[in-house]
Image (cartoon, rainbow, N blue to C red; front, side):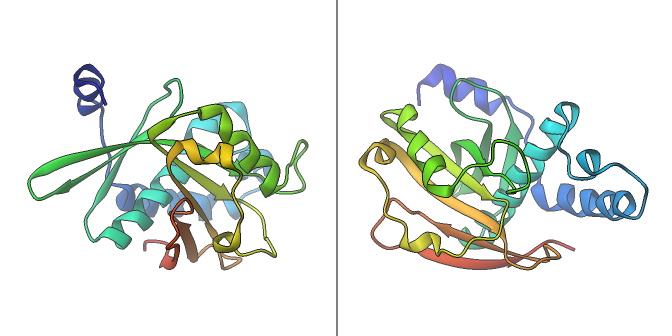
Length: 193
């Protein structure tokens, strides 16, 4: 990462994801009990896209924080090849990660794709060794992400993670990765209360 880019991303507004997710859950429950149309309830309108992506980013950072043992902050940003920046502090040093979000949308939405077709698009990032790609699995799958065979063109990025709810009420989530390494791990995390 260049000094100019590092200076720019260090000035972003970073949020603690757990607090955001707790507040969002309260709102989600209220909306679920109301007569709100499904596209709004599921954040599937153009006006709610930034909230949907921030929610996905916060869930990913919350799970990564539990995995690495320190808070991982999130700052949404629309850049050329990433959607947010994750920040964590370790040994007195700030560590920034540019993260591109991808979603495997529910099968009932138009234009839904398969996991393999989504992964095949990762080659467009070329050689981006500083880019993390986080794929939100927003559908039930009968495969284990740890068993995926990744095409060579997907290997130009720095890391590849997948995450998704593993309980229908979204109380428990799974995080799989780094899928580009020989040693891959799955961890389970509870949605913050």
